[in-house]
Amino acid sequence: MKKIMVFGAGKIGRSFIGQLFGVSDYEVIFVDIYKELIDELNKRKSYKVIIKSEIEQEILVQNVRGIHLGDVQEIIEELVSVDIAAVSVGQQGFEVLFPILAQGIERRWLENKSFPLDLILAENLRNASEFFEENLRKLLPENFPIKTFVGFVETSIGKMVPIMRKEDLEKDILQVFAEPYNTLILDKKGFRNPIPDVRGLAPKDNMKAWVDRKSFIHNLGHAAVSYLGYLDNPAYEFLYEALAKNELRNEVRETMLEAADILMAEYPDEFTIIDLTNHIDDLLFRFSNKYLGDTIFRVGCDLYRKLSLHDRLAGAIVVARKHGKDYKLIIKSLVSGFYFRAMGSDGKPFEKDKAFVKDFEKGIEYLMVNVCGFNPIMDNDLINEAYSISKEVENRYDLNRKII
Image 1 (cartoon, helix red, strand yellow):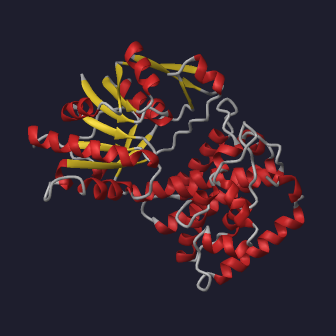
Image 2 (cartoon, rainbow, N blue to C red):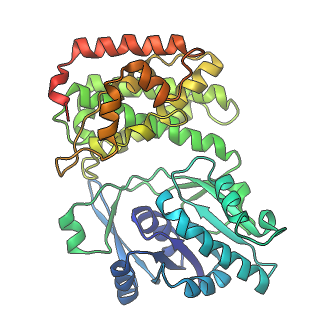
Image 3 (tube, rainbow, N blue to C red):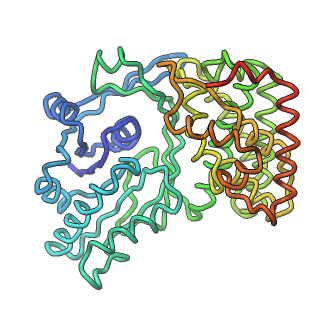
């Protein structure tokens, strides 16, 4: 049986990477710092993925086991022989991950120089392949053949996995909820070994285009629903509630279509308006999945990151200005994000967003320059446009109801 080692037994690790390879007859070895989870994986040798849709389904992923992140020598031993590996730990886990990966890669090379290691990078990280290569190179011997011996396979993760309630986690520590969507877009050119014969893998030649499609269509659409929806009615808890209002749904769709036009200008040989329109309509259908229970808070919070220069909204505006494309709806969603004050199920805001609210008091120009990253001189027209939109927002909505 072929083996995959998955660093990170979280929601994407289990519901997506582990599931795809597990049901394709791979043994799945999870590496995680959460000892209770690892112990339970080793006890049961399987776990359930609950597909949340109109007809709920259950997928049993078998032939799994786990290794605690602290068992470094065991991890290294397994890395020597696995057929492929994947990383889904989040940026907070990189400091511990890189030294272990480097040791395993070096050991693998010493034992079998003809057996490269492909790493599927299932991380929410722009230019992930360059980042991983740069950090691992520092920890490997001088002149190590990293470009030929390690495949850095970037991905575009489109699968939506909601925050699970405490009672669901207590019921079964291993179960994980997810939507039916099960396509993993990844970089065809990143592989050093033959691409695995795994149903659901969708290798692409121009990976940058597909990463930008995720950011400027999927993530941008999420932001538009969340920020416009919150302004429309702070009582909305779920995406499907906001999208049930036709006027709001149509505005979100038009915003996403505006982004599609920008994307086609940037990648004229990769996308067509028919493809992107179908993708947008499919996303709106998926966003409206009430059984998934995805929240306005989850998709909108973490404002410093989601409103930053190279992320979903500001990033699309930069590309639009490069090609002379319209972005009036996108900048409206961006400015609406400045007023986002949604709370989590615990009645509290996202921790870092407390500081954002204080920065908001410094004014729209401050946010556009210091949060969104626009140039105060070169982008002065854009900043003035944002200021005008902010006045329209403040005239239209009763913002006193939204103070943290």
